[in-house]
Length: 153
Image (cartoon, rainbow, N blue to C red):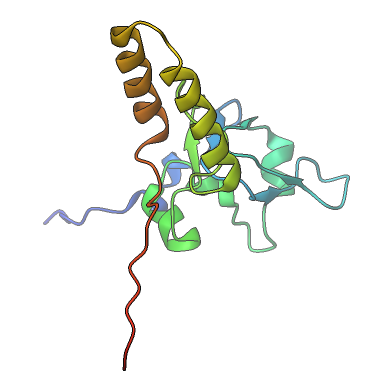
């Protein structure tokens, strides 16, 4: 009797489904979900929002075939297959998570404000540390120049 050495992806493992009582956080804004089976319409997520999983939440978001997008909570690869990127993660959001979507005007505005505040520090060491913290939180700035070529394509 031989044992199968196949490894099942997390999306096929029933034990990895979201469980009642778990908490998740959204990594992107714009995911629409239902919170109750009694209302029509839904709630639109914002990056950094948290959501406690309840039986009613699972039921409200289950399709007629019994599938629920919350079943992908512990399956980042399944999320990438469905949405093209990971959109939810288990637990509370990281402390440094910026709540606006990277690349958005709001993100760039918040980054610029944080950088301005960091650069306003009088002490050079404090200023350097504050600027480094902005870099850790927001990442590299968006490119500020573009190359343009003229001529035949």
